[in-house]
Amino acid sequence: MIQLVRDRRCKFCQERFNRRVEPSGRVESIVEFQSRKFCRQSCYLSWNCGKNNPNYVDGFRRGHEGGYLRHTDGRYVHRTVMEKKIGRPLESDEFVHHINGDPADNRIRNLQIITNSEHLILHNSGEGNGSAKLNEKKIRKIRKLYSSGTVTQLELGKQFGIEQTTISSIVRRNTWKVVM
Image 1 (spheres, rainbow, N blue to C red):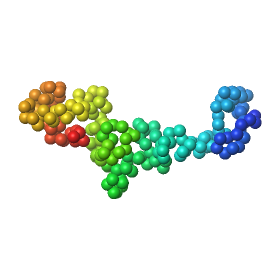
Image 2: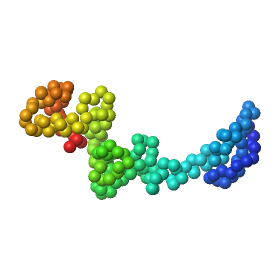
Image 3: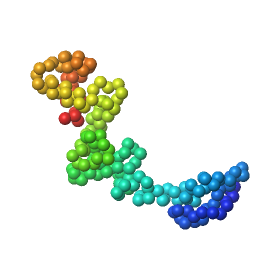
Image 4: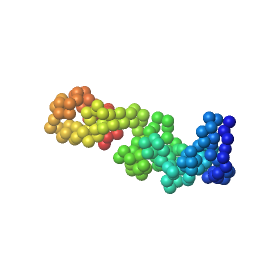
């Protein structure tokens, strides 16, 4: 049974709360007690939602999911921006990709709808994959060199250290579709 010693007011419910005394007899230290602003966890959780949440910025909250902004109801901002643009809810297999890689940049010109498979290819290749040999810059260079007609797919494969079949898939846009 925890005994209490009277001292402070809860920031949320305004009830008085005290230093905790554990069954072992250990009393909550002054430092622990003074750093506590809430009488119980439910008050802390209630206080730290919406505008009181330290991650809340201008009507949005920044989650721990890579910096993506969310509305206070939990919906991702980039998805609602895209839904407004296309005039319908997104399908479950549609992903909204941030072209410049900044998850806080939700301007419509920085967003594009891609499929799950395109999303996986994009994020499991290039700089995001430590063992990858290609990135978006190299893909653009491969396509430019091949379209100039001065180099073959086999030569490009040797130059970039990949198979000719991979070059073929890139120039036919079977892979790396989202790279323009």
